[in-house]
Length: 405
Image (cartoon, rainbow, N blue to C red):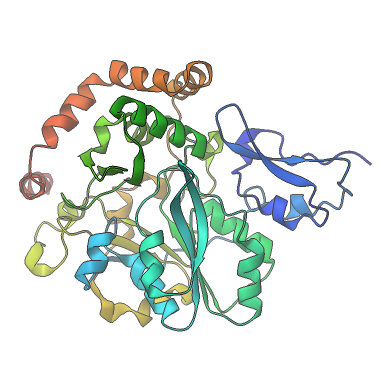
């Protein structure tokens, strides 16, 4: 019997680990490639050729997609929840609803373990733990450890909310093999994911330059409103806050130059959605609704989420917490205009290979030099922009929006 080939090309693997978890002989482990991206590898001495790993691949055998039913702009009425969220606090409110119903929530956290950041999914059971899984993480999170735990919760009748990227949602659905009435699936609008090793090498490079250790890292800080402000806390208590666009890691992420190769042909980046609910930043909110401001309760100064309700189950969860939101019914085309991943994957550029090949040969120092050498104009533009208040930017955008109309 021939050996099983999990994928013919790296473009057909998202590194979710579902195949590893379904293997009855534990013959699969996840291994980093030369750039730090993880891929499954089969130990053929243990493999019994049952083929379960091939069947469970949600990336190559995508589950059924859903037509978007309703679209909303939302912001949590709870000021503390809104403050700790990257955008409008939609995920936190869904999580609170499930936890208050004696349920459990699975989401991505960023743990600092032995001097290395480890983005991974964890299980929480209390509202006080939500902060651990709030906020954006622009790096691939591992869900390897939660498949069986999540299934056990579901089989025990516990209400479960799982939040992740669309490919992670697909992995959960194919692993479970059946629908569960007590499972709510919430996906983020995803651009793509860099590797954990790439992020940690960036941190090490930063620590070397600053001569101090990084204790905590926030990709999105709300101190200047809903934007791309990065906040870093060092082990001596000092903090550094800057426009993420002028920092090599976030800057290259936003230019789509550091993702897994499969992200550029993602089968989930389209109008139809894989999860019960899709959430993301409502970028361009004030261009679409120039009449709205702080008095109306929806503003990017505080944070606005877009929510796409895709299934009856998603509508049920959303209806449960409508009173927790300042909510405005919106239109898909308005959200889509500012989130291209709702109609196509991130664009591939040959510069990706230049960045990653340089990284492989010379380490993260090459990445830093490449960014500051090739993107001077955008760095200068972002630097100037950081001196303009969010309120002023909104006024400018409103004027532009009116001119377009």
